[in-house]
Image 1: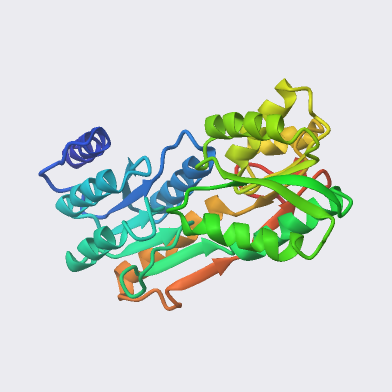
Image 2: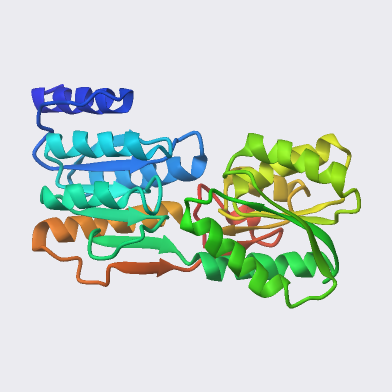
Length: 313
């Protein structure tokens, strides 16, 4: 392993442990900063970005902020100190992340946001996100159909600090609320967490034994809800998620969870790196800052074609 490579690996390890490296990275390095890879969606983002960066000739610093804005700020300091050429970011809060992205911009380092927007424009070089509203409407339409347009249901919400949570919920309700016989009996956050969703679902079931369906803001919470329903012997309850994870794919194929909505995490991350490469070389991405990628409904008809947040032809 050459010296630059050894320094880069050391920088990555130190940054992930919370320490700040004081030396430079290899000449052409892209930092990839996401939430925890324990969630397969975020791991797919990091893998997709890293693969494209390597293909284009870049080294990578792969860092995890754990949805902690303070840790994210420290990781930005690490990336800036290491002299990276660009930052690919799935951020730790729409408001809280603006300062970090601005800090990088002031240092001459462009940031390319994926999955989650920030509440400012003109700070990031690009904000590439799934069309969460369009995707939520697809999921809601399938949910209403599966419910037979009637019955009691619950909604599991994501993190309040994540703009996607609110956008998805609005997309769901703009469809579901058109059906007067669909009655929401519970609406509660589980903070994108499978463990929290399990606990929340247990409580909802106890308070609402007549519940017929659950629509979830993401697949991780859908999996937690389904586990609680299975434990209670309530596999008759219809569950719909959002993300397009392999876990939910497998559940659909086994007749468990009924549907999800695929947001193309891997493809989105690769597009961000392609735009970063163009920006590094020309000073511009050539496209608008905010970009939307449409989502795809996944159910029993096409679940077998789903692999790692991508749908085969």
